[in-house]
View 1 (cartoon, rainbow, N blue to C red):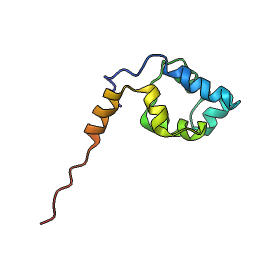
View 2: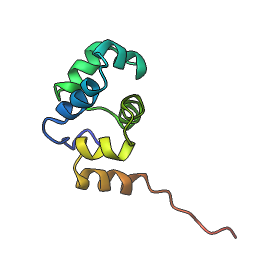
View 3: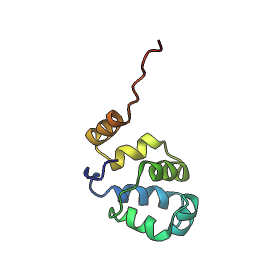
Length: 94
């Protein structure tokens, strides 16, 4: 996501709730997502904004669809803007 865009407020609470429902501690989630426990703490405190790659790893570790987690972190406008920037132009062959 673009650094200028701001994620939804308190998105970390959703991640923490999902983690706690599965009885996973922050250390274990960090291992599962190939990051540090400090980064998980920062994400859950809504201080660090997870990249799309991290959102994917969190979704897999927490057993939820990527899109579900993405909607709890970024607004629909931010998701749409990012999708527009990532579109690939398919040029017809000659």
